[in-house]
Length: 467
Image (cartoon, rainbow, N blue to C red; front, side, top):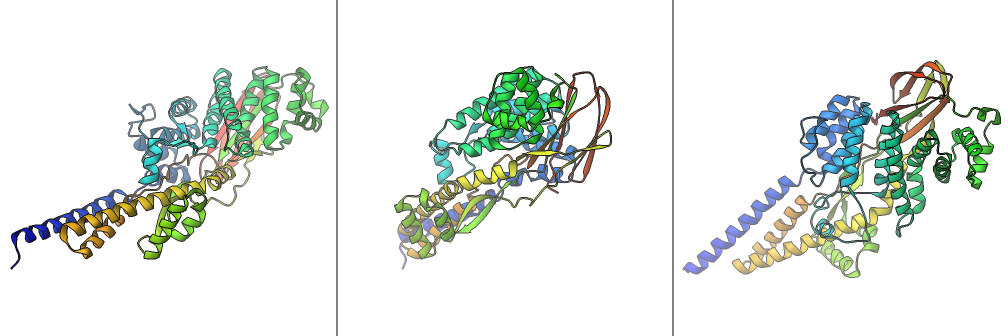
């Protein structure tokens, strides 16, 4: 006959097993969506060219009524969501609202630093990569000021553009002076920001500063379209470098006689960098990628679990496939063709940044997997002791590990509305009315400008489709 205490013990063990199973269901239900899933509606609308729907989706993600509204308090993802909306507003030519969103996000977002550990980063490593506040990658911090300079230039606001240029310089100089940072990558990522900053100070009649920024551009790319501009500026300034001398020598001396010609500066930002998506990879592949960033003990423990068949997969974030190529925009002014020069391949910058961080990201995923395994083993021991049934303990261990695996959401947060490419056209034109037509990704946009003598106008064309 079964004694009453034994019956109670079995009942308790069954209740504990039922509780663990319920937790598995709850965790599995809550762990199905990642950040990129929640922002997919904005990107889908951009692919369709529906800027109204894209703005509505961004507002829903921020939980605000409209573009005039801001979140009362910035949550852990709101700064990143503001960057998404800022790009949508830029594409809609709503430069003032876009600048406001960029400024608020710039103040709120921190920069990712793998050389330091904080409480949030510990949580991310152990449980979920989306637990802490978003931290921008270095190139993203540079692009915040870069794109916001464009907002001010499009409005003819040189004072605001100069503020953004200085902020850009502070961040660029910090990164170039930091350890464990790829300085060549920083220079490439900073090319469009340096170009816009150079233009800002050129039109502000500060030739020394303009030349310093244009020299930074030449550190990253060879840009023939600057040759004549450099020649003009170097006649007004004593600032020289071998790069500036070589680049200006390619210009036409006859074209640099005018001091301040009327000019249209067309900036075309087009395409979109790929978002991060949740991926599952075999544990063996994960260890191959992450082993350099893991302790020998962690690698041994992971191999032991894999040999026992307790862990077979690891969840981690990875960039979605990028579009192979983007055609260069076609630009005409008053019916004449003007070749556009691509000054930034942002796709390549983001891919390089991912390749540099992939091992650390994978190490974080493996570390979380090991933590889940330890928790699952602990649950199995507890249930086994409570019930006296080892089989129930093994079941509890497997259910707990499965529930935590389901709840583990890789950090798919990234600034996925950044343009894939940035191209420019600089055209010196006589005073008067001019018709500008830009065809990019199959869509044509038309603008009319009325230039006065020695006046400059910036035309911003932002087409954030991947189709």
